[in-house]
Image 1 (spheres, rainbow, N blue to C red):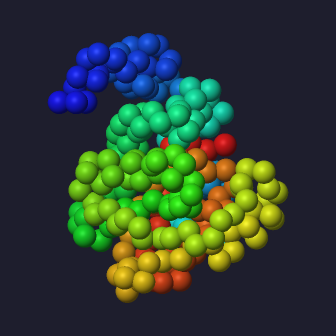
Image 2 (cartoon, rainbow, N blue to C red):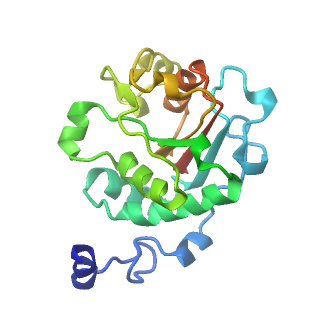
Image 3 (cartoon, rainbow, N blue to C red):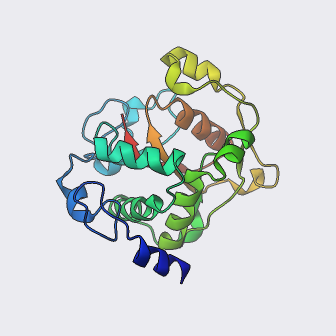
Length: 230
């Protein structure tokens, strides 16, 4: 009821065309230059966004499914407002589009084989924002797909420097020993397919470090579901 009244009093408007009821309407999204299925390592065409076998040296994830380009001004503005300006309702459009993209690229029958998680946020950063935007997206996608969501699964155990301000080599070193799997979840990873939901990927350092921890504990497959990439 609260949500209905909120939308009635101050309806959402598409950032691109000002149509009501969405922050990003389907029509505007369809007109954008969105991501074609590629291998994220070599950037060549790849069905279902799979990483090519010959590109997997020191790469621990299997697919990175990406909705759009961060260079698109509408997409980047939406993501920034979602992350930094408490416009959590923006997640409602993104989770729907990400879920549909997932259905297009991953055929599954048994949801018990899948787990949805999201990157954890350093405690003081979350305290400052009051929410983790990736967690909000993951909750919605879990409901849409009927796949179980694991909360507080991967912990960030040390603070790090801001990745965007570092070189590629520095980003890798910055993340060493940063993440840890919760003790009560370690023995539940074996042969599971993990869907990890996040907003943006740039160099892939964070994504690879998280994927490495899961693969070292016998995760079967790792799929990243991402709103945008540089």
